[in-house]
Amino acid sequence: MPATSTFRSSLIALLALTGITLASAAHADSGRIGFKIFKAGIIVGGSAGSGVLYFHGRQYPLSIGGLSYGFTFGASETRFHGSVSNIRRPSDVAGVYAAGNAGAAVVRGAQAIVLTNQNGAVLTLSGASVGAIVSADLNGLALSVK
Image 1 (cartoon, rainbow, N blue to C red):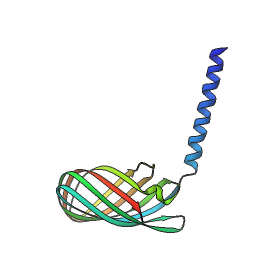
Image 2: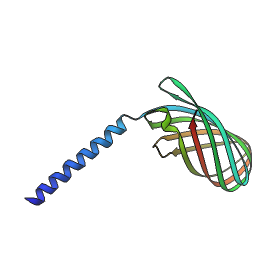
Image 3: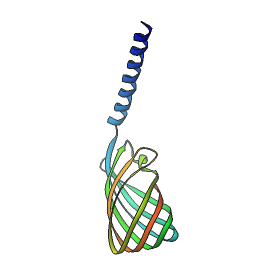
Image 4: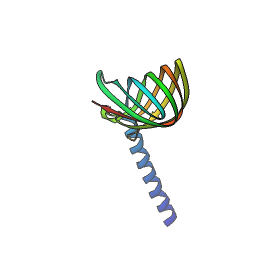
């Protein structure tokens, strides 16, 4: 009997936890996002930019800044557009996103990336770069809602 009771209690706890997890994911929403970033550097790079989050029929201005470390040489401008998912309110997109990067752009180049922040927001982005840059680095990007 004690093993059956323990199993039953464990099963009830697991179902309750699963229900809470599914309920919180079910309340998450999505939106669209677009922004441009200017990046430049030699070994250590910096980036800055601005953009807009489109969420529930409203526009929210964004501010973007970041650092990169690794092999970076040159300068570029990249315009990203895509979707943001797993958010409940506009402030969920604010936070720090980290990524590894390897690429080159001479006049034009293309990029695609998926990023996640500490709030669980997921950015699925594609974009085009203009400039002359070669990089193989680690990037940290801080995004804030104005």
